[in-house]
Image (cartoon, rainbow, N blue to C red; front, side):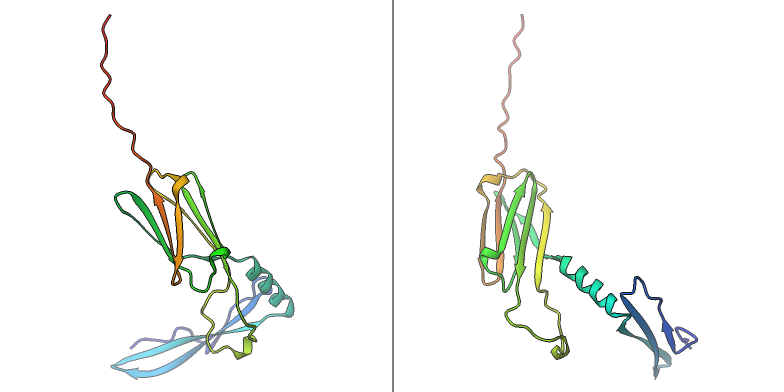
Length: 171
């Protein structure tokens, strides 16, 4: 039952813009519960020194995305985000109409060579996130606090205009 993903043991992907060459290797995992399993292993190798430079330049221009929670209370919209390792002075929050933008930067404290990493999953560098607040807000009274790596932005809702009944006079 089942079958191979490909007829060949190696599949070579074309090089795009000289950045990276990917080689897929199909590995038979054996017969488990009557099913033949295969895994596709991907190896990346630099196509050229020029490709490494292009990738490095692209990474310098890249901004990480910031994950947020946004919810409302009776009087406020609350935006929360985990921003560990960032100082308050490295965070910039701007409000334009109904859009809140959070920008910042997380810097490495030490230099570690690429070969010495076992895992490299944390994002270091610039990050940003813009979000539209779906209710009318009072942008003059927004507050932000960074405590224990959690950024909390309190966006007050705009005071709703009071409804006034107008009596029509006849002539």
